Length: 117
Image 1 (cartoon, rainbow, N blue to C red):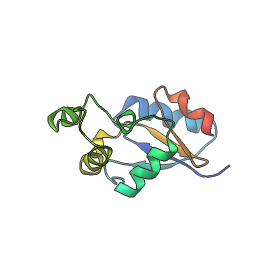
Image 2 (image 1 turned 135 degrees about the vertical axis):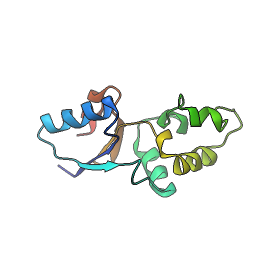
Image 3 (image 1 turned 180 degrees about the vertical axis):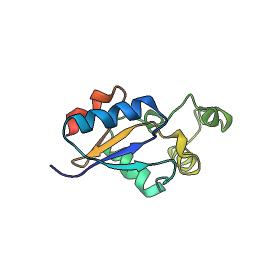
Image 4 (image 1 turned 120 degrees about the vertical axis):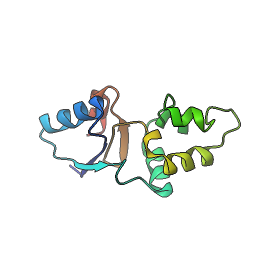
């Protein structure tokens, strides 16, 4: 199996559950605390291509105060602006995200990541 990475927030219960699920399956993923080590614009673009989502907003925490405060829900907000907002405010990235086999899944629910392992 190729390497497995989890974009993790230890304060998030779904993130902890997803990490535990991987470990139960005998997988020791590389853990990236993305709030401490934010993704670059290029990394976010690559991640978007790996995720099984239709829009950039699908990889974002649209209920976050920062999302609302920045007016990111407006129809005219471009994908480039959404990516820039995630670079500036990493907490806008939905969590957790597991990356394996050149694919990525959001662990909501945690079991959603199993199809790429």
